[in-house]
Image 1 (spheres, one colour):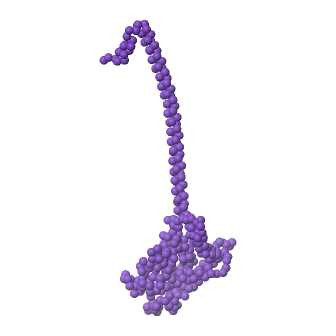
Image 2 (image 1 turned 120 degrees about the vertical axis):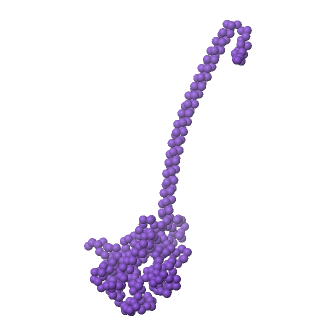
Image 3 (image 1 turned 60 degrees about the vertical axis):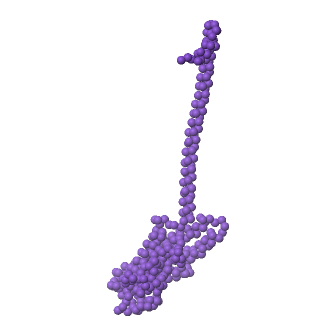
Length: 366
């Protein structure tokens, strides 16, 4: 196959003397070499420049990748910090108690039920080894508006037990209320000095946080959080044993109240067995503290605050709010004969918001 470039070259050089042609070809070769050299040199320079540029760009890419990684780490750190702030903010504005907190609603409910059992044990079953003072019990029944006979032949032991359980609780409550009204301040009355100004102080904090500009969710939450913390301390330490120079002694209020409670119960029943009587009486101090802890302190730790309510006699029996003692399973037409232990719950005045912690303990009648 013919080479067009060679043919063209031959046409251009046709008729040129061979010697000149030789010079021509020599110069042509030299020029080609020169151009080739220059081309290669320029190309090599460009390659070097490009290689340098590529290296620089590669280094910049690596540097940018490191910066990106650092920014990602910083971004993740900021996300974690923001999340921690959100959690902290949530904790500061949340009134929910931790699952392992002994004051949360689950533990409080359990302890209220345990308190009822402790009161029942303190009253005793009023059977073997226990004498009931019928005349005094009859008067007590009248005070509680229980229209029933207390004669030996038809004595309703169930009702007497329930009445005495309520008497135990209300006796303790009356003694505590009297203590808080006592006009004296010393190390044995610290509980009074804390409780009496506490409610007005917290109410003013609520007003301040809600009725002044510049408030926030955190500020508005502070009065409730403060209330919870104060009542937690009171629930744990109030009326516990007192540390003195001479050692540790029972809180005077507890020791005095114990005697008064035992004397009150002995008006209505006598435990004939000495060892059994001593065993029951030794429970009085702890029982008084438990009643105070739940009725005066721990219920105030909840948000909303847990209230308690005694069910009135002759109210229709309601299984949603009452746990009854009856002879058969048909309680549809029953009414409350007597309430021995109150209903505990929040928002008790609003059926739509009400939350029942423990139902009232009642004895029913047709």
